[in-house]
Amino acid sequence: METLAYAQVGSATSEGGALQAWRKSSHSNPDGACVEVARPYDDRVLFRDSKAVHGGVVGISRSAAAAFATALAQGEL
Image 1 (cartoon, rainbow, N blue to C red):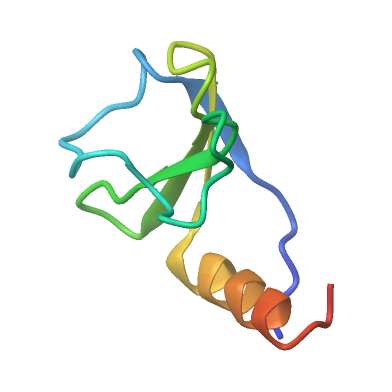
Image 2 (cartoon, one colour):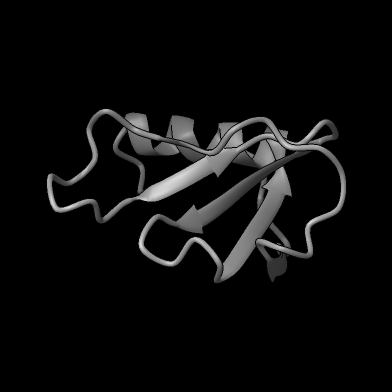
C-alpha cells in the first residue's frame, strides 16, 4: 500500500481546474454528515465536509485514494 506523505489543502473556491460534480455516498449518515468526493481533470481526488461546502478541501493522488479505500474495505484501518 502506498503511504500518503502529504495532502494538498485548499478552499473549495480556490481549487483550480474543472471539476466533475461533488458526490457523496449512498451510505451517508441520514443527518447529512459525510464526506463528499470530486475528481478534477488531473491526477487528484478531492474531499470536503458535506456540512461545510465552502470550507477546506483536501486533495490527494488517485493512487493514494485507491489505496486508502482498499485498506478501509479490507478492515486494515
